[in-house]
Structures are given as C-alpha cells and as structure tokens.
Image 1 (cartoon, rainbow, N blue to C red):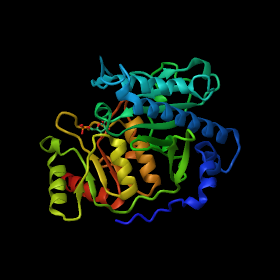
Image 2 (image 1 turned 180 degrees about the vertical axis):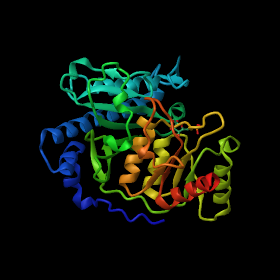
Image 3 (image 1 turned 60 degrees about the vertical axis):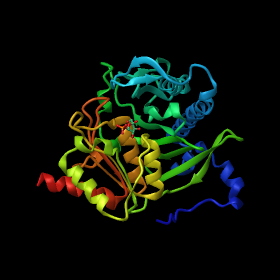
Image 4 (image 1 turned 45 degrees about the horizontal axis):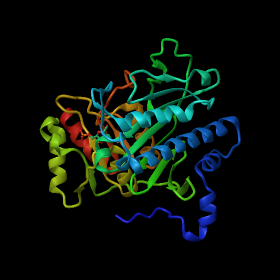
Length: 344
Ligand code: F6P
C-alpha cells in the first residue's frame, strides 16, 4: 500500500532541524502556559532517557557487563536483563530534581517509585516499559521503550496507586522510542501523532513526520503463531482465514514497539490474544497496550481486547494484562468479528 503521508523535504531542513521535541510540544499546545511548559519539559526528559538508552544499546556489545541476565526474576515472573535494570534507572534518574514527576511506575518495579523531593509540586506520574522486547537485546535486534504520562490524582497515601486504575483516555501523553537502525520517538498529546528521529550529530530528536495517519487497511498481520494451539478457536479461525487470503503477509519481531511502528506506518494488525495459560494474554495495560492504543487511535486506527475498546479498559491492578488487537480499523474489525461471532 502506498504511504501518502507528508515527508519533510531537504529544502525545509533548517526549519526542521530547529523543530526539536520540546518546541514541538509548545507548538502543539499553542501555549506557553505552565501546563504547556510542564509537558514540554516532561517530553524533553523522556527524550533524554531515550538518548541515554540508545547510547548504551549502540555500544552494548563492546562493553563488559552490559548484556545478559542479572539472575533475578521480576514482578512479571520474567528473568531480568541487565539492560532492563539500566533503562529502568535511567527513567528514574532523568526525572530526579525535575519538580515534575512525583511517581514512576514501570514493568520492572512491583510498586510505584516515589521521588520525594518532587512530590510537593510534581503533578504527574510516568508509566513506562523501559526496554520492551528485551529478548531481542542480546542479538542486536530492535527494542523499544513505551511511556505514558498521567495526572497525579490525590495523595496515594497507601502507596498502591489506585488512582492509576483508570481508562486509557486519562493519559495526557503517550508514545514510544524505537531503537532500530535509527532511534525514533513517536508521541501524541491527543492532538495527532508525530515522529522524531535522533540526529546523533546534534544529539537532538528532530521532527520527521507530523500527523501520521495509519492506513485504513494493511497487508501485515503480526502475531506469535507459536501459540496457535493455546488460543481460543475463534482466533484460530481468524488466522486460518488470514492464511486463505492473498493480501496478507506475516511479520513478527518479538518486540511490540517494532511491530506497532511498522503497522502505524504501513497498516495492518498486531494481535496478542489470551492463551490457555494466560487468558488475558501477555501485554500489560498501563504501560504497554494503553499508551500504544492512545497513539494508534490518534492516528485513525483502532484497538480492542476482542470485545471492548482497549482505551476503555479499567485495569484491576498496576500490572494487569489484557488481550490486544491493534492497528488499521478494517483489519482490527475483521479480527474482532471472529471473536464476536463465537460469543453469539
Ligand atoms: O510484552 C513484552 C513483549 O516482549 C513484547 O514486546 C512482544 O510483542 C511480546 O512480549 C513477545 O512475546 P512472545 O515471545 O510471547 O511472542
């Protein structure tokens, strides 16, 4: 399918090079209000985290003690990689002394992490997956970071972050950083989806594409077919149908951010359905599927659990999971139709 999105031409280079992420946020919000300044500063710090992680990844194979496992198991029951720990700490570190983020919650931490010196004034919570797809790290394939910003509501006196257990429309901003051949940051403030590429010579994320629109339909389906016999019959039926159609081709990288980036740019559908062992699938709501759903919906796509709009899901706990179907509107609706048919 031809991508008709506007690409910035070389003639517009100077203006483009000056459109840094923090400037873009202010342009988007058309304001210099304190809230706009906060968001601009927040995005700037997230960008700094992205640069630090990208730098570490680019040299990982050359440095001692960067790759491999720590020997610990995280709250998800997964073996922790050294780079997971590093990237998790990077996000904490960039928000220290910021006065912005009082609390961070991530895949790597059982409970939210507080930065006490920020809390009297810090009105935001950062939710993030520091290294998504970390099984790719040791073999030099793409990985990503996913983030969402939510307003801190109340004091969270019991420290259980119950105020975070709300739907995905409560996100103020969301996005991801893809560490691939180049480092790409894609974000939305609820006003379209925009991408930036890290220019290593400037050390800045420079605007690449504004108002990205996902094609209504694509040719890619992205799902781990190794789970075929672990799925419900409806998902198997759907995949059999896809196999029977000429127009589909399979792509699956093992890193959600990479697979979603492809679909955002070229259309198609990504699925992580529930399995017999994990009826809610694998993907975590608050720092994986909800931020990506926010982006994809902003780009004109659709997201679903199979039976519900994913952005309407209210997680029962911080690390809750949900089945995920996400991508081009027509492709998501097709997958949903198989699930709904079985429920009738
Ligand atoms: O949620 C973590 C993650 O690594 C995603 O990035 C990826 O899409 C998925 O898990 C891969 O899981 P599996 O190996 O079960 O297909």
